[in-house]
Image 1: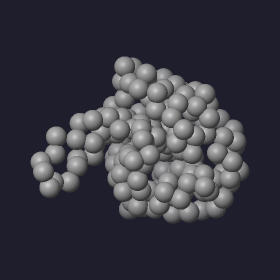
Image 2 (image 1 turned 120 degrees about the horizontal axis):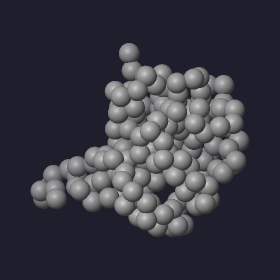
Image 3 (image 1 turned 180 degrees about the vertical axis):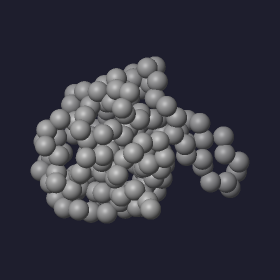
Length: 171
């Protein structure tokens, strides 16, 4: 627990099998669709990530309390043809905060920055990317806070029109 007048501590911990029920509950909340699209497709992507040794699946905690889920996986695992900006070795980040109150650009941006830092420290990723619905301004601002930049608008099957955000490996 944070001391009075101190900043909350945000950290990522490895997602475990016992977190699946919590994640499913979070996906069922109305605000989750703006971040992930429909719950069934989101759960399928999360199951793919949690079942892969080539993905990083994390629970976002504030002062030790779970407030969200985040994963990173090589875009090659997602199938289909990725946008041209996503060269081989790009990892896609996807995040879900448990409540709208937690889904601030500051909280989400910190979590995304922590995940991108881990991806670059533990893989040979050349970049990290994210897709954010054009209706989710807070989501775009969060990616910007984490050092990502807008590339262009793409048509995404679950989110509709979405910003493609890209964060390159630091030099």
